[in-house]
Length: 248
Image (cartoon, rainbow, N blue to C red; front, side, top):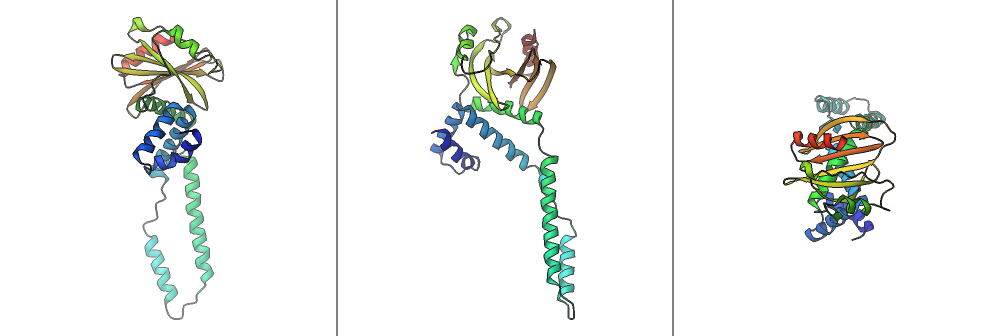
């Protein structure tokens, strides 16, 4: 399956309309293709937002009674009928619904930070579900780092964490925040940890921030012109320990 086929099948996959064999082919493709994987994650995030109760327009409780009363008045003997008033009322009502929906989209649209947080969580989940944990399986950072040459426009920093109980599993290429990023995978007992790294727009540093999405814990910070995000189902205490070690 190529990217063109995957794009054509994405909505069918999201709606559960593909048969099992085609769904499996699609999942294998998005697991191997960062661009198609990001497109799927973006659509899943949009679906989640659109299903929010806050986006639905709630009809006033007395609207039905008001409509019935108006119809009864118009149908009574001697009543003067002005059909154009109904057209105007219907147009006004439709406009109000459309305006409310339009405003709701902006009011409840996730922020840039929220979208990025969801992208990071989705990247971790996707790597586990598609069994695409690493592109270069190796515990040797001197083997993993050269693999990224020519695939990224920056050299990802590598960390020797084996003595701290976080052995390196390998690395892979991922796609976040509209750009390719380095994904370095570590292990803590049976828990896999994704460390996602890419340059930020400036040299400013940001302290640790902690998030939880879909049952996964995330810690992120910026230092020396680089963004760092770690995500795992590892308990928050040990994940923070890893973050502290990486920032040293």
